[in-house]
Length: 159
Image (tube, rainbow, N blue to C red; front, side, top):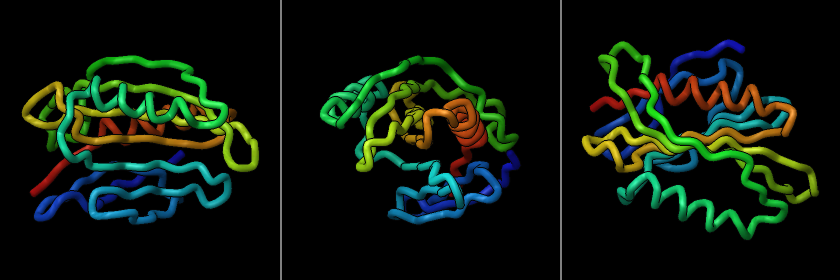
């Protein structure tokens, strides 16, 4: 898969940049959220600036509690770590994260899978700042995981 850098919204007087799959089409959901959609499979990458600020664990625990009511919801994995944001403008900054992967049944009864990552990019290493998530078919899980990682490590905030 080929990737290209892109810029997207963010809060007033600020913006963000990530690499995204080259052929995927952007859909602006709000000033703080954009998603890119695969032209054929319906897989997507969603990037969201999080407000208000909350600790990583609180944000993830709340999301998982909300998802537990989703038809067919099954948590597949949950992990924590620190990633090196590879964009040279980040000067080797490290960002703590929590990633969880889950499956659910969509409105047609098909199994869908989501890789959801919360990143701490602010001056406080425990505050969730950005959500990076990919969703698609179960058979695309490896690709979705790679897309999530690429978008996370290339993240750049600019004034």
